[in-house]
Length: 192
Image 1: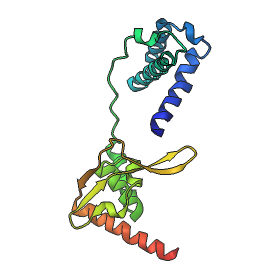
Image 2: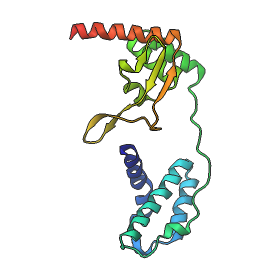
Image 3: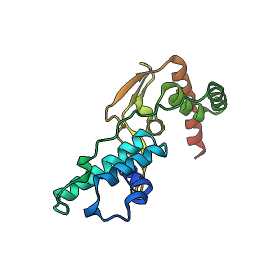
Image 4: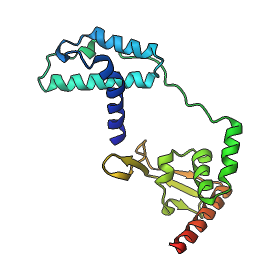
């Protein structure tokens, strides 16, 4: 997917090339790969970034072996990195309250912040919503797409990250916030 490709390019550009870009590929040893993993750990890079660097190297060398460019994959001799993903930090309560209070001043922003901060949707999922995704009578919201910026294509609708459509129950208050947003959106269409 474009998101995966972007992550691969980033780890190659920012970590693998600076550490190994001048080494000859056919003489790359497991020691050099272990050193890269160790250096990244010492520089306090997160487990996810280190694991991604390992995965990219493993995939690249697997492909080179498969295509006959190399006879073996040195990454197979390196123990995969272990660790834990860092949990995301929550917005401090006072900042959360300040953001929400400001959002309430604008119907569009209020709806977006409500769905992102209170319902817990990812930004791309919020931007990917259509009015047909809301059942006002049943007070449900169906999440089935996200909006992503793809290089060379612009903004594109894509399946959600988990690849599973999900339906969420909304509160009466959230339904009213969305109705208000819809009302203001209709007013804007009249201006157009």
